[in-house]
Image (cartoon, rainbow, N blue to C red; front, side, top):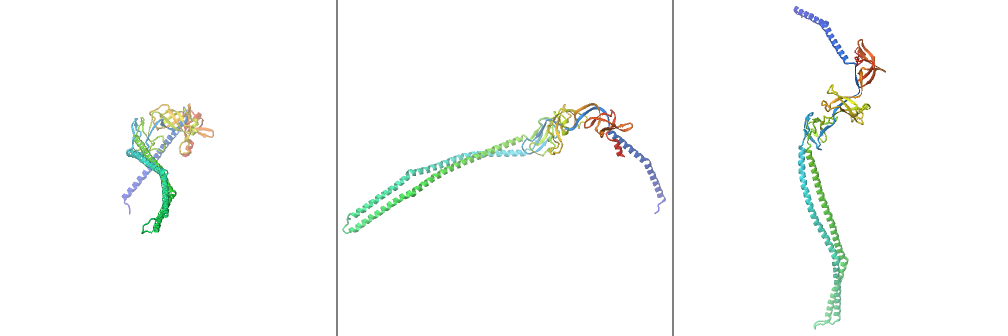
Length: 507
């Protein structure tokens, strides 16, 4: 498809305009833009170079040790739940609140404690009633025991009397009766024999119609029957005496003796039983008394806990949550957390007597002594400085990290401020410059401006002819500056890097 003449003309015009625009951009505007960027980069580099130079000055050089530390109150009131009772934090005052002595700081949950107190009061009342019942039961048991002992003693006395009576009276009387029965039987037998002899030897009177021989025979038979009867009676009496001696008397003696021993044994049993019942009653009473005492103590303790369910400020101060001296394991203080006895909930430092705490590295211990001066610079107060002196250094070093035996050793140390300032507050981070020596009116430069080549020390100076190396002699130094005893003058400008090396790196 062929283009029309008009469209072809417009296409040629647009191409010409685009070529002119490109020529202007690449020929005019782009070189100017590149030049501006180069100039800005040069200015930035010059500014960087200026930041990395130092103008030599003459001033007092403080020789010492620079350490980090923090402001600390010499006395802190660490408040915790004193009741040996697990509860919950119901309410707590906001952190950093200024309080007066006696102000309410925290309140703990008491509903469960109140319920336990009510239950203990009911339990104590029931125990007291049971104790009274146990005491009354003991009194009844004592009366019952007395009756049982009396009955047992009477039984023993009766058994003893029965045995004594039998031995002294009944046995002799029975034996005498048996002997008398034998004597009577013997007499009766003798009488019967005499009667038989008389009948045998005498004439029998008979009637005219009776036979004398038959009648005599009959009389003799009757007399013999009487003799036989009396002989049987004598045998029976003798047998009775023999049975008494062999069986009845020993058997009754044994029975009476056994009854006596049984009564005596029963008396001992009753005594043991009564004593045991009294002991059990005493134990029961003592157990109730012990439970009453224990419940009373627990009740009083819980009632005392009720007075500990609030924390109040002991002094004027500012509220800090938890224990600021504890590095880990502190409570996340907020309503609803569980609280146990002794867990520090709030700390109120006394701001009237502040000190500075710091950790002195073991390698610097020999250089620092108690009494050395120190300059304290708070991180949050630029330009502010406070004077002080080292007041305490621990005798023994400890690990910086307690649980890591390989961590560096440090000495816990303190600095006493020359004067207290309201600008300092507990917990403020500070930099501490411990002064061991002051060199007055001397020339010094930053330590990074001095370079070493074997035993030669030199700096890079900025001069009208460019950068040059200048040999210097150094004196004493601290962590930041080194004294220059020769080679530099006040007002010289030195580099804090190797400018030649930088140029090579840039190329």
